Amino acid sequence: MPEIKTIGIVTSGNDAPGMNSAIRAVTRAAIYNGLRVKAIYRGYKGLIDGDIVEFKTQNVSNIVQQGGTILKSSASRDFLSAEGRQKAFENIQKEEIDALVVIGGDGTIHGARIFAQEYDTPCIAIPATIDNNLCGTDTTIGYDTALNTIMQCVDKIRDTATSHERLFFVEVMGDDAGFLALNGAIAAGCEEAIVPSVGIDDSQLNTFIQNGFRKTKNSSIVLVAANDKVGGAMHYAEVVKNQYPDLDVRISILGHLQRGGRPSAHDRIIASRMGAASIQALLKGLRNVMVGIDNDAIVYVPFSRAIKENRVLDHRLFDILHDISI
Ligand code: F6P
Image 1: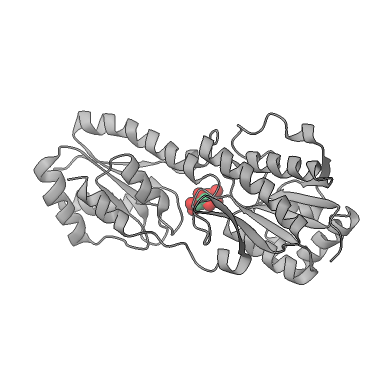
Image 2: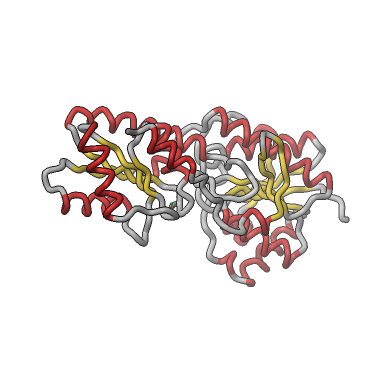
C-alpha cells in the first residue's frame, strides 16, 4: 500500500453548520501526524479546475464556531462525467495528493465512491448534511444545529399563532428523510408532522382538526417536510382552507436559514471527532469508508452502505408526538 504523505480536503454539495469545525479537525490532525494538507476550493469543481492551496494550521484558526464552509461548496455536474473525473485525477497527481477527505452528504459520498473505484485513490468521507439521511451513523454534522434553528423559529411562530388563534403550516427542509420535521415537531411542541415517507391524507387532516385543534386548542402548528411532489406546506394549507374556510390558516417556509448559523456544541464536537478519526482511518490503511458515530463510538461505514438508501425514521416517534400534543 503506497504511503500517504499528503491529503486533499474538500467540502462538496449543500453546506451544513459544523463543516468548518470538521475542516479544522482534519487539517490539524493531519499536520499533527506529519501529513501535508491541500485544501480544494468549491467542491469537486475545484478539483477539476485545480483550485487548490496548501493549508497550514493557521489557515483553520478561528473557524470552529463559523457556519458555512470556508472552502466554499458546489454541486459539480462535471464530476459526474468521466472526463471531469479524469481532469480531477490529473490535478491530484500534479498536487501530489495521495488521499482525499471529503465532507458532505449523499451526493458527495456517491461521487467519492465512483472516483475511488476508477482511480484507486483512498477516500474517507465525513457525513455533513442537515438532513441526517445517511445510514450507519446516528447523526450527521449540521443536523443538530438545524434542529435547534427550527425549534427557535417555531417558538416564535407559536407566540403569534397563539395570540391570533391561528393554524400554521411551517415548512422545513430535510429531503425525503423527514428527521427535521418529526424531531423538530417534538422539540417545539407541534401538533403534527407531515413527512414524505408517511404523508397524510385529507381524512387524517380532518381527524386532526376535529379531534385536536377544534376541541382542545385555539391554535396549532404543523411541521411539513418540503416535498416537491406533493407541494409541502402550501398544499396542506390549501386543502384545509378549502374544507374549513372559517379557520385562520397561515404558512411559513423556513427555507435556507435552516442551513446557516453557528454550529451547536454537539455539531462542533462530532465534527471534531469525525475529523480526527478520518486521519486515523487513513493511517490505519482504511479506504473508501464514511466515518460515523454509533452509540457514541466512532465507526467506519463502507460507502455502499452509507448511501444505500435513506435512513428510516423511527415511526414510534409519531406516536409520542401524537400522545403528547393532545
Ligand atoms: O441537503 C440539505 C437540503 O437542505 C435539503 O433538505 C434541501 O432539499 C436542499 O438542501 C435544498 O438545497 P438548495 O436549494 O440549496 O439547492
